[in-house]
Length: 400
Image 1 (cartoon, rainbow, N blue to C red):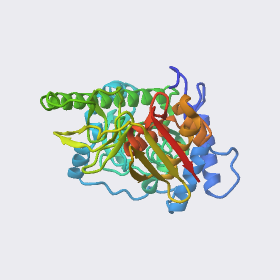
Image 2 (image 1 turned 45 degrees about the vertical axis):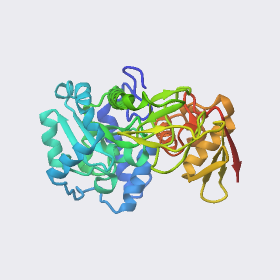
Image 3 (image 1 turned 45 degrees about the horizontal axis):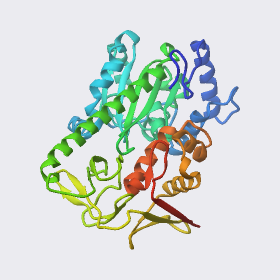
Image 4 (image 1 turned 180 degrees about the vertical axis):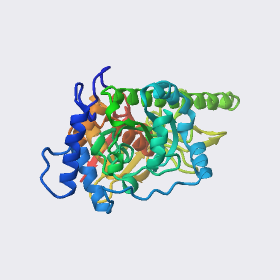
């Protein structure tokens, strides 16, 4: 996170920037690039990539491209279904308490780029209305061109845009600072939190404010998750009183609510009905439905797990424990991460180290955490955390 008063790495301006002069320079860059001429200065990489994508989509920079808003009942249904609804009050408390004084909007979109919540200064809301920046609007690059929300979705990273870094001329009077928000349980992208306002009011600290709000919201989602696990543990107590031996009680995503006779772990592979899964320390288990969760017990054996990752074609992971086995396909990215962890040995790798290995820099740690979380949903406790590494009792052979 950026220090107080400092611009984050993805920031559009530096402290002390003359905003009016910078805005005029960006207009010259915008017009030259989109006219096919040589610009006085190259646009930032994130902007150049987005403009290239948007030009390929056939959008026009000198007009307001067509917006089609979802009906209000669809917006309400998306709000209800979104886990962000659990922490929208946290976002309001962090952002909108200063929005009127600071002349900006807090905008929260879902993973499709649909604006679900929009709050803040009345004057800025009126201007946003004329731009079509309202609840129900789909604010993706394909619809409205280069903008912080749509570009953050496209880049899977936080994005800040200032003035003529936006593709549409109608958005040039704006700045937008957007950061993806993820489900801390699954790594799933839930949407984007954005702060937008008049371009000449942008402050380098806005990025840190948005980042802090997202971190607090994700922490709030984790507290809700812990509450659900505690309720699952309590509901399982009457059944567990009559069960002996090592066991786990987990939710539908494999998160552990209770453990007995086995070292504590946070997560295993997501259980499925009638499908065996391998858990280091327990060996091969056949999960049993238990209320809103699962009871996971060993079928007997040593508890050691041997895995083989075949990358000669589509990545396939074969897992064997006590003479029985199961297999699952992996995405190329998950296979790449697993190979990196296997080669790192017991020391493992941090999210920043994985980001550097995969992307060439440490700036994609959030993306890496989300990918590892999704991978652990598929293979569970075979990968341990803090740092990321193969779990104790797991051996992995690489093929191809």
